Length: 365
Image 1: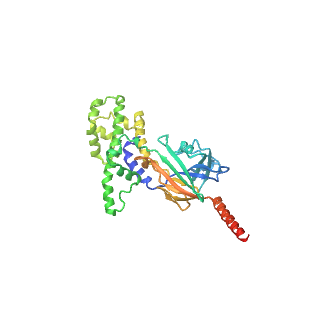
Image 2: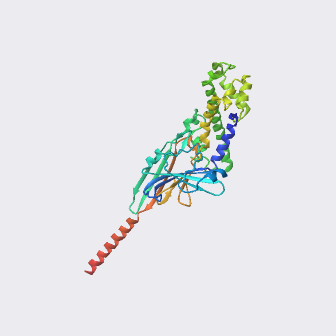
Image 3: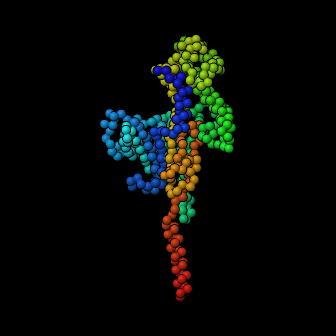
């Protein structure tokens, strides 16, 4: 099965999907939550995954709490450290499984991050600051997920400035703030070709370098490895002359026409080892655009600052956590909340009443 010429369409679909936020996977972090059995004053991580199953699968599933559904997990999940599982059967053919686990510290919680990209656990670092203010305690939670932009061989900063790259992938800083619709459109239209060229050059380099590295596997190549390398720019220009998006090009046919040989067909056939390996090279980059796990956060007390997130009616904070937000820089999730110290109010009232009572007693005496 030949799939390489569909990658450009996949990128477009991935970018569209990451802007819609209708995922199957949601991660919920609870800071100092209680209400999970006997656990109190712990930090919890929950992963919820919904899937549609067939009638045969429904019939074979024993419905009940703490039943682990055995359907394959998405590639972005690694729940091996999550000891508790609950499964619910919803309307129609939908089954929802929630994995959850308590952690004594936020640092321990980060060590067991259940999200992964290209089979590697995402690295994150978190801290929780508590500030005692007598009548209330202020909590600030910050979790930083590290950048994965080094997956791409060519840095985006070679094509656009940092502010443009950051805005394109994260929305910050807001480079169109205060602009009219026409002005914002013009601004974006000037940025898009830079990002497109960056993507085109990266994917061309991925495929070209792979072929060069495996050139000895080619039977009867039409040119030597050295000649193939010398033709790099000419080949790139030829592919881009066929389509604006290099991944929409049928690369197998294009190389046949360019070299007047079918010697390179093996790299575009998923049934060959080289085809499978090069396919995986492209997938490692494409998976970043497919990654979309909305992050929700529950803080103690009342949230007073949701950071870059959006405060929801139920008091949780929503963060649109997507792979493209990890391309230009680290992705930081932070929020601040206040929790009233009831005992402090009681003590204060008692002190006031005691002082008032002493004053009245002395006056009467």
